[in-house]
Length: 397
Length: 224
Image 1 (tube, rainbow over the protein chains, first blue to last red):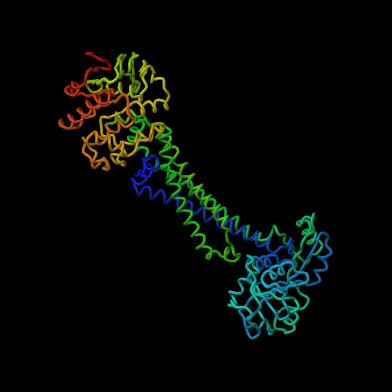
Image 2 (tube, rainbow over the protein chains, first blue to last red):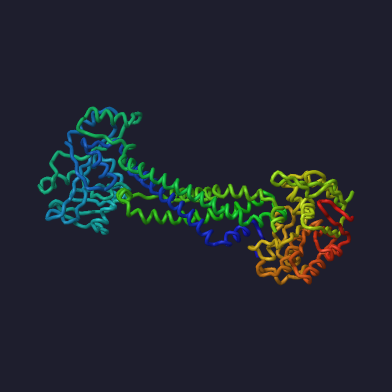
């Protein structure tokens, strides 16, 4: 049998009133699960936006004036939107000092009907000669350039189109396409698009079934030369070319981040209130414990327990309580985050997710905060307990 | 050098601006291995006196010298060490922790003296057997009679092999037969192990079993 120790005495104390222990564990678990959910939500949205804009690989994104929101919806949220500007804008952008490389995309939405035999989906046409967005993904997944009459599905599109298998045929705006593969998941809104080279667009435009006109493009991605400030070049671009808006990489998802900041305030307030309530509950229960056990503490002091022994004994008890509640809270919070991801359109649309490292860090924060709040709430009663006069106990009876 | 020397010990209390004397200028010498009883009415200062000897109460003035060391000058940590290593306490009520078994109650002082060899289950069971309730080692206090609980408390007081056992009316609420058994235990411990025992009681018959009998009245020792 195990030796008697502070730990075993603390465990026996916790078992003494299981309902009361359960209430405390539940309160801490509730606080920690709320905290875990709030942090997971915030971190996953923020990091997904950052990752998405980084994966696009462009320093500046040039869009038709007024289409900034549409572009962000297309690139980050997978929303089906169309916006166009004349291809001649390319020449104007090229002249701006500091631009190192640029490429353009044209976006088009397929429609249900006689012209197309696939579900309505987003089509991205790119120029393989200049492209630095799609080409790297294509190289990784297909290992060769796309040919005329070929398309490749984005990771999410393959599910939407029900592809699963490669080399299927599809009719898009009366043009026959061979879908030759599926790109790996990129975590951007482009995961839900179908990709083809620009020369296919000519045939689509000639079919007359699409709203697209010749000489239109949707977006220009640019890379900035070393030593140039992207924000400065962006301001110059907007100043020189009034027909465009410019989104810097750091500003991508600004709309999301503004919404996120508001949600964060609510999370912060709720978590703060829950922390105060939990601290108060722990304080109240440990004050009651101090009164209930005063006689036992006096006996222990008379038997030779130092003040530090009494503190040690109750700290072990409160730490076990805090860790137990926090562990349950971490599990519940993680489960809740996974479960509710599907319910938040903000998370659904940006393919938010947390890495293992991020999840471990958030879990650790939850454990630390839950346990610290528990210990903080109990400290005042514990300090009172340790000062208990042993003689008072002897005189009590 | 005497084993335990008490010199001009006084303890006053102040309650609601009124002072009264608990122990009034007591001087006393106790030899090693002595069995001493102190009788007196309630409020005569008996408990105050052994609380000061046991290091759980500081005197207002005077000294308590154990083998030359004045315990009244020790800080809280040293006093705790003094209690756990040299004193075995028995209180005037059942003083066991209800969440611990008899065996665990006996082992309790052991966790407060990590410097000493850690007592194991066997040591606790041996002590419980010595006081005659070895078979109750795994019982909780609520499953024990008053007399059995006192025996557990005696076993606990002996765990750290103390020099002095301070017993404050340890048989107060027990029947005569059990009272006699507990007293026999004290006598045996005193004779076999040479432990100094200071027994407080208001029962003159019990006090008579000690080698030396003192009486306290109004905080003073009389009839020495």
